[in-house]
Each structure stands twice: as structure tokens, then as C-alpha cells.
Image 1 (cartoon, rainbow, N blue to C red):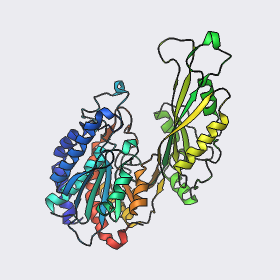
Image 2: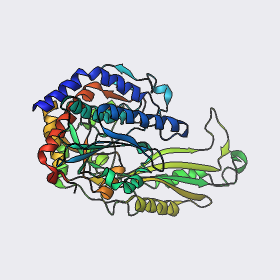
Image 3: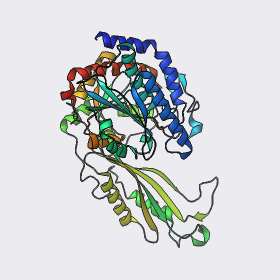
Image 4: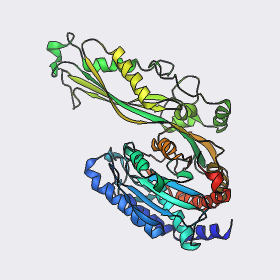
Length: 467
């Protein structure tokens, strides 16, 4: 390593305890974007980040107003001719329900067994904060970075990033860069870093089934009137076959198949499906026939029923035929599926399979396109030696089964290729109770990012331009 990298890493190591205390302060802000009562907390988290960027040495840190929650912007542009990286992340977090399953309060961060627990520790406050601290380490020691950087931290990722595309469109020059760098993905396993090069898209819907104008006594009306729950179950059961495939007509028409090389790379990961089943308390894993677990969960489309409700939900029994029933559905999409088209296909399927006597509606919610990056992009290639320098091993290339819909929007609007350098672990309970972040990866992640900026600089502005 050169002296600049060494100085930055020494600084990060010396300040590690302070970094951790600052991260705790960030996590204490309950910035839940899905709940309107936390609107003020979301704004407080944004303002906290503005202050953090300013303390780190970024210039012009401020809030950029959007139609919803603000975007946090800052920059350091002191290296003319060097590549410019746009660092993206999000400061909003998921709701904490069910609260009773948390071992410690979700917004009172606690360190246990080398891990920090709390909502947002892994997704995505911990990883956002690592970027701020890596930049600080360079600026407080060397006085400059090897590259130019811009920050774009949003407050609506957990609710679909509805306002950010418009913000990017309206501020193209402000956010223009040569490469997009994101840490909102995960490593393969402890000590096994990974670069994510693909994300699944998403389509979210709700199916509403309506019967009589009000709930009915099942002793008087049972057997003679339509039951919306029965109808809903029939509709949902029609969506999958025994082979695990989705039976919505046209669902697979646009799916881009994995190449033989990609399938071989997945097999070489040596993923232990039996161990996963045991860890999850399952007797077996299931899914689409002809594909292994990793392929099913990262590179194949899905249709999942996330919730069903209707009728009596209380203790004991109530002899009622409900007036309505509802189901929430999300689909994970792969290249080249389009969210709007998939929603149309599901709506048509629901209409075809709706039993007589009920009225059925389909409501549409979030949608996001899938994304795949070119592995030979110099921004991605620069991450390989950065991981090797800190973790002692090169990263594997993986696709992520989840969705970050805004990544495809960055590519569409600004032409940026995304380098997704994640430092969390798949087992860290993102979106679930007892979310946590391994402090060893928090430390090593900052160091890896310190090295990465130097590796990116070595490749030059013309090479790193987005494609």
C-alpha cells in the first residue's frame, strides 16, 4: 500500500471507538419512512447526516428537497481529472414489528458478541456511515482523496424510492459522475467478500375480494352464498404449480436465462442447501424445478404471497362468512421483465380465475426494474484488489435476490454503472427483529473503501466512465 492509504487506515483504526459511538447516535434516530408518525425522525436523520458529512470534510453538505423526504448531498471535488464517484445509500429504515421479538430495543443500539444490534445497523445506516468515515480518514490525514466523490443519501428506499428519480432528473448536473458506488448488499459469508453485479426488480400488488355487503351468519347463510376467503384461496392456489413454477400466463416470456458460465460460477460457490434448511428449521428447501437454491433466489423470478387477511381474527371462534378478503403479493423480477407488464399479467390471471359471485380488484403498488452490471467495468475491477488487500482474499461475483429499484434508475437517468460493495452478512436479520452488523466488517469495510478510492484513481477518468 502507499503512504496515503496507510495513513488513512491508521486513522480509521485509531478512531474506531469514536466511529462506533457516532454510529450509535445515528441508529438511535427512528427514521422509519413507512410510518407517517416518524416523518420528523426521518428529517432528523437527514440533518444528522449533513452534519456528519460536514465534520468528515465534505463540501456543500445540504438537503436537496424532493416531493417526499429530502436527499442528503455533499461532495469533495478537489482532484481535477480524476474519476468522480457518486456514493449512494439510504438513511431510512424498516418498521420494527414484531417488537416483542427484539432482544434489545431496536433504537437503543447494543453491542453483543462483536455485533451491534439495532434497526438500520446493517440496512443501511452502518454501511452508509462507513463511506462517510472512509472519506474522513483520507481527508483528515492526507488532506485530499485520490478521486472526486459526491454523496447521495435518500430517505425513501424502504418505501420504493418514489421521489429520487424526479430529483435526479431535476439535478442531473449535480449528481453526474463516472461511476456509482453502493454498499447496501451483503458478503457471501464471514471472511468471504462479494461484489454484487445483479439485482432483481420488484412488482407489488394487493388482491381484494368482496362478497356480500356485510358479514353474514354462517349458520344461516353458509353453503348458499359466496365466501370471499374461499374465493381468494382458490385464486392464490392457481398461481403456482407443483413444480414450483408460476402459472400466470406470460410470466416467463421475457426472462433472460443464466449463461452456462454464470451457472457454473454459482455451482463453484459450493452453497450448502442442507445446512441452510437446518439453520432455518426446515425439513427441505423448495422452489422452481431445474434450478438450485442460489439460482432460484437470485436469478429467477418469483411470485410470493406476503400476507392474507379477512374475517374474524380474534381469540376463539366466530361463525361468520366475511364480506371481504385480501392478499398482498410481491414478485421479484429478473432481466428483461417489466414491472408494469407483470402487474398486467397478474391482474388478467386474477380476473380469469375469480369464482362466480364475488367482485375482485387488483391494486398496484411499488415497482422496480432489475439491473445487471458489466463485470469488466473498471469500477468493478477496482474493487477486487481493494477487498484482497484487507480481507486477504478476492471477492466472488454474485447476484442479489432482493431489490434496490433506484439502481436501474441511476443507470437510466445518469448512465452510471453500479459497483455494489456490500459488507453486511446474509444472516444479519435485515427487515426483521434483532437486526445487527458485525463490527469486524464495519472496521474492515472502512479500510476496504479507503483502498478502493486509490484503486479507482489508478484506472483513470476515461476508463471509469459509466456505460
